[in-house]
Image (cartoon, rainbow, N blue to C red; front, side):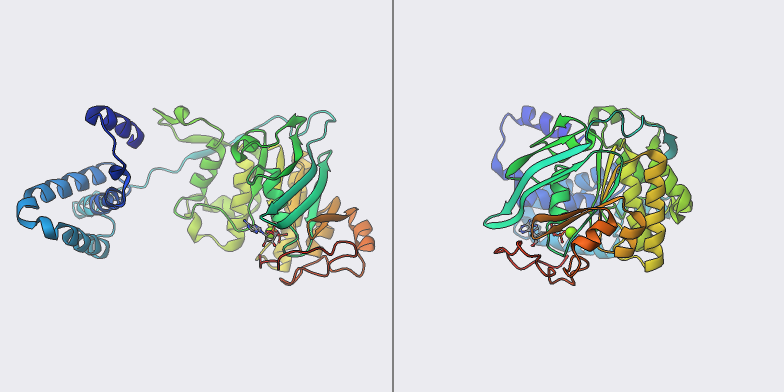
Length: 383
Ligand code: ADP
Ligand code: MG
């Protein structure tokens, strides 16, 4: 609606000046919305009318004080009626603004994640540098089948950056990426997502002010075009089987109507994994899903992820530090240190190959560089 109003405004005035994109209008919009009331459509409209008619009426007398007066009104409104005038009035007459009903979740059955023998993900010769600081140096990695692969390495090794590149979240300088046989080099994050590559970030990225069901609905609706939503009134949504299984097997299932901000840290981690699985997902990338969990919770997480992997034949790549999680979960482990792959194989193979090197939790110090990997790098930041 705002976009449409903006487009019509241009035709009505026949002129657009940079001034209308300035700070004054931007702050006024916040003021109108704050005074009218967030969470309603009519509130901001009333706020806009009240403020603009008042400013027009007082313009003659008070022009030089108007900006000061709006500042005072802003602070007073934030203190006295933080929800805005319209919601406050509706509450006084006994008709509080209702939160929109939560979407109805149902289970959507997608085709199997993996069909045929073609490689699921191939990244070849990936180089990534921030300025002169080389983070990834010619990394080649491929996921050929529905395996559960752990990517490990000291803090600052480049694991999150590699995951970002494998889902289009960040660009890279050199190298080719293909998913499910299609060359996707240079494509954007949403295009990777529409190919079925889903990602969970290192710090949970859930929307705190929305309920669990709404977070899942937004994730499930993500691949839809905006036009699909116009005129849509029923709020039912099909979420992927993986997301439904997480709701069933964690405490989230009973908390669909709770706002995400009120969830525990572990529940937020599961919610974000469920969100990654809510849209059609054929390859799941998880960045430190057990960060902040206790040792027992971490082993439960390993078991649940293994179940999801087995039941849905879903390929999963997990960045992890916790060796007990890795032993419990991984089919195969790839070790990254200082931007290079230094070992790859089963957990036992990798433990032998890296014996004596620090590839586990680096304690923020970046670990001991393996022989042959010492290069000029900036000090690793804390993750
Ligand atoms: P990991 O996940 O293995 O701990 P990251 O991939 O987060 O490591 O980071 C690898 C290195 O790249 C770190 O030294 C980090 O400081 C650096 N880095 C990450 N993102 C940026 C950025 N946007 N700009 C500059 N340096 C970055
Ligand atoms: Mg990281």
